[in-house]
Image (cartoon, rainbow, N blue to C red):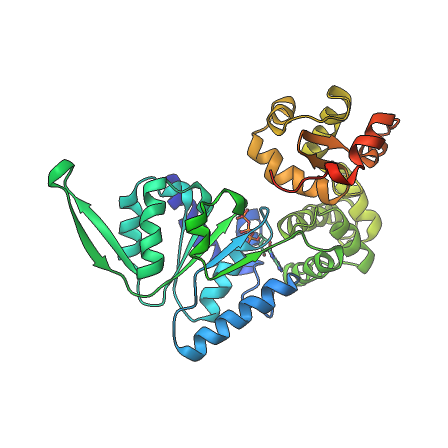
Length: 360
Ligand SMILES: Nc1ncnc2c1ncn2[C@@H]1O[C@H](COP(=O)(O)OP(=O)(O)OP(=O)(O)O)[C@@H](O)[C@H]1O
């Protein structure tokens, strides 16, 4: 079995555990904490409303819903939403990922094994191979695949009809998807970083499920340091719970949460070690930029994708980093956060509105 398939099988297994069975294993707990219905999902109001309409309309027409593309940084709930779509449609769910589909044949095998109405979730769909992508165009539009038998001039394409299904694609980089693939999704939902109030509700819900005694100010402290990301909020809650149980009486107060998170090197605004390394390199080594994302990634010893998809969205949203056509620049707030004096060039460069740039 491919490594990714093994991961997915493990995910399925974790999803089948009850919380009591799962507790003690971080990945299993994460799966068990997933909301199961759209109503249970916290935040992402717009996507929730839009999706609820798409699903309701499909139910009334007794048809499989249109294909759905979900985009946004990691840990915001794309997998959770795919599971919810299947559950809301009472349809089976099949999970795979772009990197697991290296040949068109891998995809043909998956597609031809689908049942009517099934939801196929392809995580990291932007990392699928090109031939597989082209096969997917036809499958999405005409519910058909052409399987090529043989090679060279004697090769023949045998068309195979597929039952109607719903593809749910997830990507951290909608911009990387080729236009023809993006256009074949009937609905695209963009998941943005969560507001602290929503994260607070998520932390409180998880604390309830995990039977952690959590005071309101403790929930606010964890939410404020969660980088706008439910997965991180849930993870921090578990680390704070450890601390509260070992160093105190088990109750999570603001003070306990702050102490625990300081210990785990999550600063008061939620910046973690990578975020701080990026800011530090940007300010101290590159004089505040502009500097290219690849150079920045090398400077902090990380993959370009990790810096771009994990650290950058949060740093931009927090007002510490700006993207300009000439590269990334530190804002005056970044210098301030690192306790460094703000150079005059940073004041001018970062805050000329014309220099801000949205696309990578
Ligand atoms: N809106 C939400 N309400 C409550 N919990 C949420 C919400 N969104 C995500 N979570 C929790 O966050 C965790 C991560 O969610 P999920 O795995 O769906 O993210 P993802 O976007 O698919 O991430 P990745 O792309 O990295 O796999 C899950 O444990 C889930 O319980």
